[in-house]
Amino acid sequence: RIELRKRDNVVLERILRGPSGEEGDGEEGEGEWLDDDEDDDANTNVDDDKGDVRGKEDGKPTENERALDHIPLHQLTPTQKQSLLSHLSPTNHRILDNFLHLSSRLELLTTRERLRLLDYMVERVHLLVCIPETSRIARNIVMAQGRKGMDNEPVDDFKGLVCFRYTLEEEDMYQTFDRWDALAAEPSADAPPASPPRPRSPHDVTNDAPPPPMPVGRDVVSSACLLRASAALRTKIRSRGGGDEVYEWERWLRHELWLRNRPASTAKDDDGVGSGAAEQRRDGGSSVHVRPWQGNDFFGQCIEPAAVALYKFRNGSWDDFAFLSAVPPNDRKNSSNTNTAVRQSHHLREETLMRLNFLRDIISGVPSAKEAEIVLLEWLLRIEASHHDGSDDDVLSTYLEEYLPRIETWTLWMAVTRPSPMKRHAHCFAFLDVMDDADAVGGGVSSIRASPEDVRDLKEGMDRYDFGASAAGKRLATAILKRMNAHLIFESVGPKGLSEEVLYGDVDGKGGVSAVEFILPSKQPAKGSEWDATWSDDELRDEWMNRIGNLALVSSSSSSRRRAKGKNAAVAGEGSSWEAKKKRYKKESWPMTSRLHEIDEWNWEQVKEQQRDILSMMDQVWSMNTTGADK
Image (cartoon, rainbow, N blue to C red; front, top):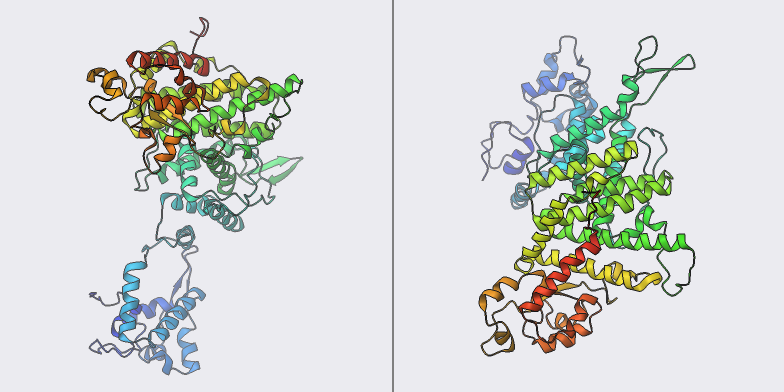
């Protein structure tokens, strides 16, 4: 079953042949646990890090020791055993102990048991075979395999680089390694969330032990590394599964190390001596060694906050963000608050929640909008850091009222117009450049307003888009209609504020998920039916059936949704007549759907009118009416 080569694996040989050599020819006795080459290795220990050789003066064993090589180990006296093994290093002693332990256990197994063990090893045990140049590299490889290498991913290789190669002190290495494992652990619904990381200053190198990180899962950590590296390097990083992204991640790490250590290392004293973070710095006439910014700082300040923020965003845990939790939800039962500042804070919080929910729905459901997550993650990290640093209200207002609306409009433009990946990344990096410039000089963000050409392309794309023809289109239509309906409710309730159910997309308050359904059924109507009489022209029907004007947002409590359990929500109620749909729509909490019951007949003219209403509402929701100055 296995072709065993000489010296391939002694333990494997024992599994195959048994302790008595029952399946072998007996040429090699069981006691030959070391041959001449192995004996030379055992008696000469080379320290890879220092290059010194320890052993006999001439590096060779004596004739008496060679004579002991061919005696089974268990037959040696304690004195002979000590003489033979005296020159083994502590590491080699442990390796030998492990080998002897395995050998002794194998002696107790029958042939059938050994074959079962062999099958298990072949099918379930994964081995990483390499010859590292130094013991330090070997340790890095082994310590990076948190899952024993059985499902190793590129992010695990990156963990080894951050924790060991780019971290100086051994204590910091293992502490960072443990924190990475805790961060990459799968989150448990029963366990209380850990404290989120506090954004720190780039030059904060204190040794205070931070609280344990919030577990977010390995996939989220990997995604956060991809997004942040793309933003920092201004380049598209592909995740093909071959591990190529590790090289880009290391380039991001080295870039951050250079940036953080550069201000001190490039500055010069009057006498021309460098005063870098990793060099001797003059302080009051004495030289003080300053700890450099390194891998453990990179994890604590770049990876951990990004992974936690991304996890919160993808799960809609908005109240866990400090900048949002600072403003409590509006008390709808007590709407008599006359404090203008408080009302404005509640208004801004509710509008921010609507925008964030819309962005989450689009980014998670529409492939052409995925790149927006690069910008949004940077926005989340910056506004959280600004809040923790105690920035004034003008700074926070810029992030909430200037940046976020433009991110929302730009993401919608990408989702609807579907530009090429190259163009999407170019827009993304240009957006980040503008944010960097605005943050650095305190300028405005007018240059990232939607241009008239972009607005025109967006509206034309909305008008032509066949939302009902694909699953991604239906998800996009659901997000757009939810955002528009929430805006209408937001404008109508006044100082009472929106309910949390509407803010989170659960308009009926029953924890369900709203979705779109076709008003004109997508299936060919039966001959002689009401729909067949109204839509007798097949060309008109094919032209307008999948447009957003023919889609209605229905809540999870809709009767058709309940009847269509397990089916696609977009085809729920396909067999309903228009009269039946009108009665159901009248009970809907979404205003754009409930008002449909006032229409007597659903024909192509009504679809066109509904389409025009939706397009005109885009100006209200996303403020697309640009002024002459903006143009």
